[in-house]
Image 1 (cartoon, rainbow, N blue to C red):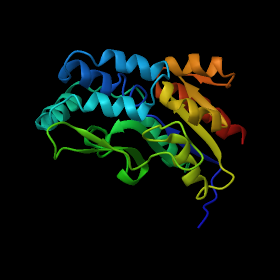
Image 2: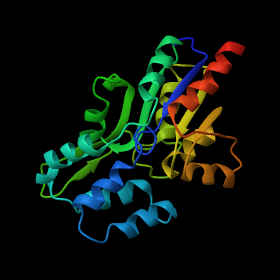
Image 3: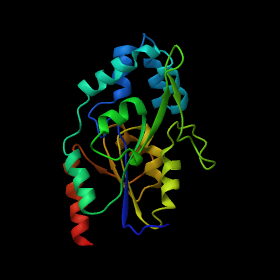
Length: 224
């Protein structure tokens, strides 16, 4: 069944909802030396996001799971204005989805009591082996060959069927948000995504806090 909505929001998690990238922080804390070149290869687009993220987590022992969760919950700082942003989207009846290249075992605990789990798309994890194995419930559909891991364009296409004709708003900060930004009607960008938007001539609005985004969207709501 198609629901009539003027807009639908697809928001990144690491470095966007949270101030820092949790995957990088986890690697710095728990991974043996040698993960940094993998990050550079992902950013330079010489290996896929899926391959790189899988490689990085395969370097960490599965028995570190609870320690990593505690680490993320303790050090992860939510970007200013996020709770107010959730309230704004609810009051304006704008569907909000978190679409993240992060991993379920730390994304869901951080978002608990903030957003319904059904509105969160991310990668999954398997701790049954000696090291952490990442699994890919939101892998690329037949329209994407970027080997994204959590494929944001594929998630957007899936939800487009539900929100036919709705304006697509993408919020993000990194290379993982580039392909989604190409599909968006409106892009809010920070950090590395700004560089990629400029390289690809994608119009964007810069932001530092979610208050900045609310301010822009409020003006548009008033106009409409």
